Amino acid sequence: MTKQYLVGLSIGPVQDFIAAARRTRDLWFGSFVLSEISKAAASAFRESGAILIFPPAKTNLTPGSAANVGNKILIKVTTNDPKKILKIAETVARNRWKEFANQAKKNITVEETIWKEQVKDVLEFFGAWVYLEKDEDYGAPTEQGKGRKRLDQLLNARKNTREFNANPVLGDSIAKSSLDGLRESVLSSQTKSWQKRKLGLSAGEELDCIGVVKRLGGDTDQFTPLSRLAVDPWLRHIKSNEISLTAITNTLDKLLSTNLGLVSQVRGNNHIYNLLPYDGQLLYDFRLQTEIANLDQIEKAADEETRKNIEHAKKHLAHLQAIISSPPFNTLPKPSPYMAILAADGDRMGELLDSMDRIEDHQIISANLSEFAATVPETVRKFHGHCVYAGGDDVLALLPLDTAIPCAHQLSVEFKATLASIENIDEDSVPTLSVGLGVSHFLIPMGKQLDLARRAEQLAKSSNKPRGQSKNALAIMLQPRSGAVISFRERWDNEIPPDKLFSKWIKAHNSQLLPRGVGYALREASFALEWCKDSSVIEKETSRILELKRNSDGSLIEDSLIAFICTRAAKIGLAQIANELIITRRFAANFQLSSESISGETA
Image (cartoon, rainbow, N blue to C red; front, side, top):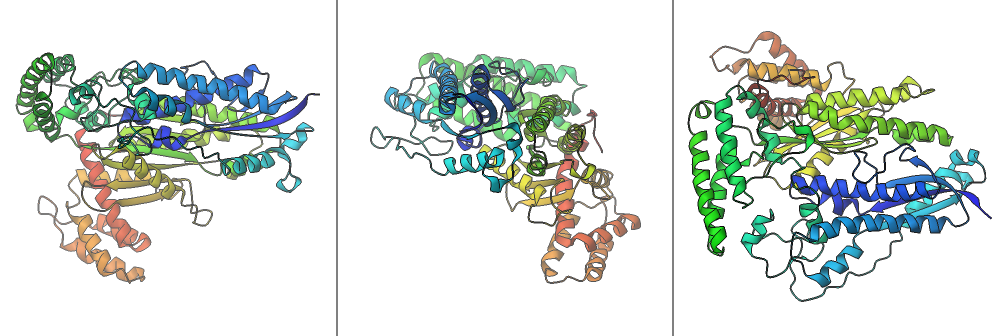
């Protein structure tokens, strides 16, 4: 006899697919693969006659479609065997994963035994179900032991009782994956360094099964390298000099043809990088010199054909160096190597879901979240960024530094507007979006950059703060190449919202109204006054420091600006005002560099 069930499925491991990354490609393709696996499972549920709740019923589940599906799926189904329904979905999802694995394997020689073990050991599936006697049971209180809340309890319990099947080690002294060190490398021990280079790998890099799929699966030119995002403001600044840009492009064309992995094309993301459709690392002199040195190393073990390609590559690199060292480039500021990773998450979504008892209400919420997610890639593109993942209320994107804050603000506005359109939702209950920006040098390992963005997201949420002070905020964490992380946080609904506040500071920096070292001077004072809680003392000390400072033209800081800084220092403390000025100085350099206006900019 068939019955009605509420079924939940969680697919992982999220950490391996998304967080373990050294390059933009690892991050982007890992997110894409996990979404495709979840999409396959959701499609199997739909074909079995299930009603989708998360993701929405109308989601395009065709393989490769633009829709992003999260790793948690919720359905209602009429069946006499919910376990069988889950098993079918698992089988379909595993087959989708094998498609990606087999495609990647065609491009590299692997150790077959290790590869086969890891392919079947990668995915985790956790499922649970509850009997739904009637639809009204869906939103039953937790203590009744039924409905969605009971399903969540069972699914969490299932995750905590994993089957720890040991992955056998099939040999002695096998190198671990360079992405996270969790699994053995599947690369053949016979793989030469120059062969790895042709595949986009560094000489000492090792990859496990997931790493190979991230690096070699799909279209290798779909992702946008971090260096291209970092150099984007500089390129927009020199956009008018078409002849010089053409010379750079032609040289990069020739370097690409050497097939040595020196240059990668950027063909994805709706061609917004047509100004220079390549990664930007060779426009930085320190990277150009490094690549020349790398070629000298791999030339020693290369075959004859590769040696010829290396010889040609060195000539083109020398030509590129000559171009950048000549007018107009040698008269311009150097491109900044800093960019931003944006991580955003909806606030109090659990409260909204718990406040509604009907399946239909949750389907409406699911549809609205899907509607927002569908608009995110285009919104990010308007700000010259690349969306890595947008699923429901979860967003991960890569952005140039000068457009990151305007983009964060635009996403927060669009998210709130989309959720506010739901009927019977109180204005005070409309979910908001907390956004974290991790700002760092593009050469910092991707895993650390991603961790910085996630920490910024958690700072934005600040769930330990009282209601009215937590969540609905923008937080920024800046990681210099040397030194400690510098942080900033302000709520979107403050009297001066964070985007407007940054606009004020950036204009002050770029109008030469603030001396270059004023932020560091205030930071030094904050160390000496760490014990002080008296706002009047902090205000007076801030005023004293600012009155001694001189702008670049020798003039004093304007009285109105001194008054504003002193008032803010008394409110938030010397350490935080110092952080604001240090961080905004970094942003100001990029705003000044980019002459092309981006829609939505606030400065």
